[in-house]
Length: 198
Image (cartoon, rainbow, N blue to C red):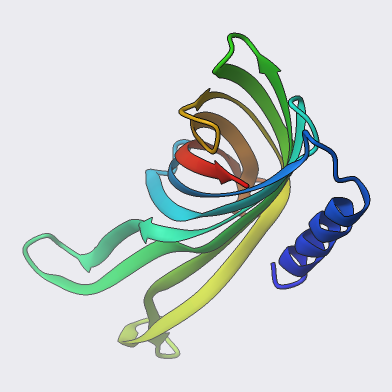
């Protein structure tokens, strides 16, 4: 992700410098996303920012960067006697997307998204100490991160409030979450947000 964002902004800046026309414009925005991983019992929420460059009324290049606002949590033990906590949340999620729009009415557009999305999960829990016979002798806290990235795509709609502001909602299929060599879970995202065009 540290390499993706500078490259994106460099690409956007060079595009801006070489192709400025009356239709071209930059935009910045904010987003909120709800995400679900199939059959895994995980629901994540994220909030973040958007930076994009609109080439014309049909095509844009957009980058999104967000962080988790709520994740999955559980416990070790029983509800009556919990003895430890487990949690998963999105540390960072970044996307580089091509956005193809089609005006339906003067202020309303439908669009498609294709690109690359990378998600970094932060996982906290407890590991176990065992003796030579396999008996549990204690536990220790652990914290690690896991990154998954790949192709993402989706559809959405956009409403132009005025010359500068628009609101949008879109639905995306994110890269499958790999849980092992033979297990993967589909990952879906619904995002709402607002953009300001310069």
